[in-house]
Length: 409
Image (cartoon, rainbow, N blue to C red; front, side, top):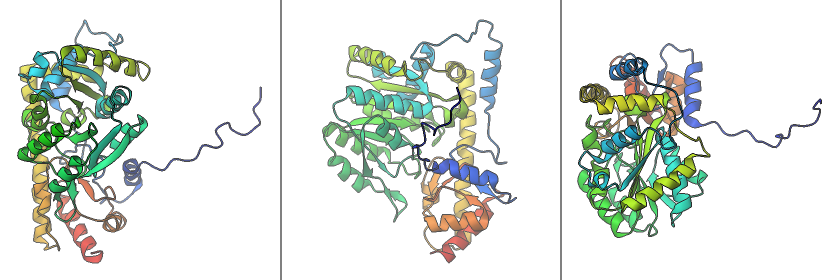
């Protein structure tokens, strides 16, 4: 039967472009030989190329030659060994919560999927449907919770006058938060600011949140990507777990193992008792089942192979350190170049911030100027991915920033 009428979808409006992907498209379409992409958060080598870790290649070769391997469906919660190793990575090998079976971990679709499953669980089974997140935060964070029907509010975090942490504002806002509210925290390498609390400040945050009955939900997207030590970078989470209280964590292997397209992550929920943890897991299965039924096998098998083998784990840490060292070097080189050019302002925040990102302090007008005149692409808030730089391109960026700040102060 021929269809002659209007589309049944004729009232569908065009959605706005997703900013970070719009930047990617504009960069790809730019014919300039000098173009520079500092937008999307993926690691790049000194040559500007994607990096496939040697230890990942090694793990994949092992998997290919594993004669007993198959492509059967995984359980709803994923690979059991992957879940155990992921919990151990974030909470520590000596975690009392793990030993007491108070942790339930489910394999999810990277950090984003872990956050969304966690948000859906809270929407169905938690009494307080308000989440507080840092201002600013990762652009996708609000979407996970809004989609689950949870109200999003913010707490002060970044101080644009210092390009550092507004710790007093953070404490005041969390102190005024509704009792029982969910608080989304970034464990380390804060996106987009690159500003992390000190361990002493984390302890104050922990005390305040426990006093006010606030529920911590940690986004662990960069564990090991700040200090090159997964244990050191996980200290904020372990502080909260050590006090016996409950929390959620969303762990991603995208950045830390370069497994972006494999979508490998884990949601862990630390509970008061083993019985509660078991009941929580049963409900997580009911959320996952109608969403994607069960997770993919390949990426999680790579992670499992690396984490369970002492030699391969050591190789991973070595490569992780090489990545973090390069990012640290780019920070220092950029600061030196900006300082040498006597660009107005204090640029010391470039080296004080940590992780993959820096919120440079450039405004939207200056960012637009950089894109139009110098073919340098970044998000409109001035966030740059330091690994998108190289020794060759740092001077070019510094010259461009000098022009932007001079002409658009």
